[in-house]
Image 1 (cartoon, rainbow, N blue to C red):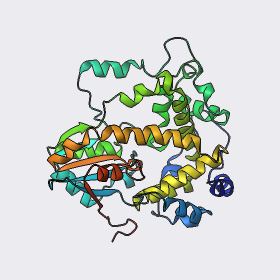
Image 2 (cartoon, rainbow, N blue to C red):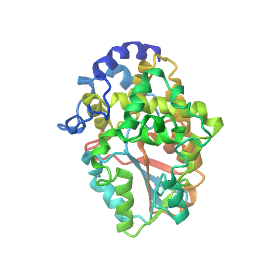
Image 3 (tube, one colour):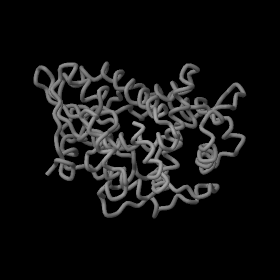
Length: 351
């Protein structure tokens, strides 16, 4: 790990040169967010790419976005790794994926964002989970100092005054940071890929389910026992916000997704974060991965078996949930399912 971190400090400086912070994120432009001539060769933009590729090779099931799942009794379903983005390149789903959604009996997402009751709608719009209600105003101060201005700038871009920003609870800060800032330009117009899949499923007459309760993850961020993890998650996504200033890094990350190199994306993130925080152990990344990915994967495995045993299900979750020893591909195999990759055109090892 340390052999990757120290050289990557130079890579980070090259890829993520941070200009002065300005109110309203003036650096965030359509040109910065527009991706052309895709995909790109990561080796041409990341000097230490061979080391990152080597680390990626150690991640189980790190290549591929689409997987076929066969239940013990023979029923067939599919697992798809999404990218939570409104970028047209991400919304342009492969023909094979659209065909599977159209034929699905059920579409399972991380959560179903459609409110089931008026009480749910009211609770969401009250914002009560987003702000401290007891006068405590310390969460932002728990983040890495280098991120204080970065995170405040992001929150102020939404029109929040400093007095309001200081009152944000962990759930409020993280819920903002989880979104790609480039999606601001299409907010309320284009869906993220997950929502597009949901709409395609509804149009095809599939039943839509969420693998977890709508507010489960958001509520967890505010628990006292989750404070250290919430700080790590906010640090990680605050750093991603800093990385968002690099057009070349954005091109690399999107290229890795579009070519199915999910393990390489994970390895790149882990290394960049270790360099950014000068932390060879990668503590923030590990804690973030443990809660947002590993723990939720185990929780979803309590919901998935009856869905998959019935067959013709299309399961769409963030791509980082697929690879690794605690990834869904491994967990499903351990549970007795046959899981095989379906290579897609344009992917590594695809046609």
